[in-house]
Structure formats: structure tokens, C-alpha cells
Length: 165
Image (cartoon, rainbow, N blue to C red):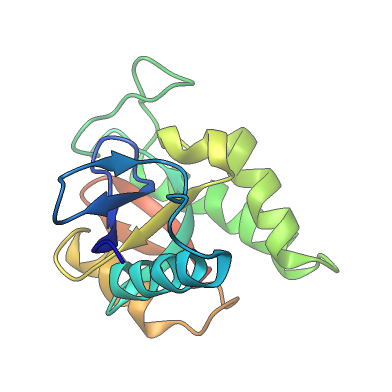
């Protein structure tokens, strides 16, 4: 049998099949692999990719002191940090009183987050140590899956963080 393995595409952030003997690559499972073999390779790749990583969503409110006080919603953000915190406290109250907090978090992030991740409900995907600003990373790693942080402050602004995985 051929020597197939699954690798992650850095450009597409998606798995692909790679034959280490022939150097052939394919987005679809090769015909010489059974369905079970292909699924086992995909699972192994997924586990390797996630090792030591967390998946989180966030709702970011920028302020005039943010390292880049602009967003997809506003070209020039002039609110103070205190105003940004008050806005986030309002979102926090809406989330905490919702029957489905994860859904409410995603809805609010989609509409109100100053991050480009708003188009994915605030979902930042999987990330590992050293990939995010320290206070954000500490909050994300300190949460249980489904848990939402209190307000945290980074150079980007103020955030609520929800751990997804």
C-alpha cells in the first residue's frame, strides 16, 4: 500500500492527503485507501493540529487607546476605555440573562465586535500558546469549554472571551 499521510494546508487551513513516496497530493481521499483508513488519517491529523491549542470566540470593543483605533464599523474610534467597558458590560448583561448564552454571544459578536472575526460570530478558531496577546491567552486557557470570561483588556481593546474548544 502507498504511504499516505494527512497534512494541513497553510493557505486553506484544511487537511489534504499527501503520498510521501510519490509526492502526490489530493484534497479527496485516494482510491487505494479504504474509507476507514482515510478517516483514521484525518482524525490523527486533527488531533495533532489541536494538541495544546484552544478554540475561542470573542467580542471586542475598541477604544481611542487601542493599538489600532479603527474597525470594520468605524474608521476612527474615539470612545474612551471606560466607555468601551460600559458597552461591553451591557453585552455581558444580555449574554448572562440569555437562555442560550453561546448563541447570544455569537449574535452580539456578529453585529457589535470591532474584530474582523465578527463575520464568524467572533470565532477565532484554534490557537496555541504565544499566538495571542498574553491577557487574552491567559483568559482563553483559563476557561472551561462553554465558559465566558469577565472583561479583559489588551492592546487591541476590551474583550469578552468564550472558550469553544
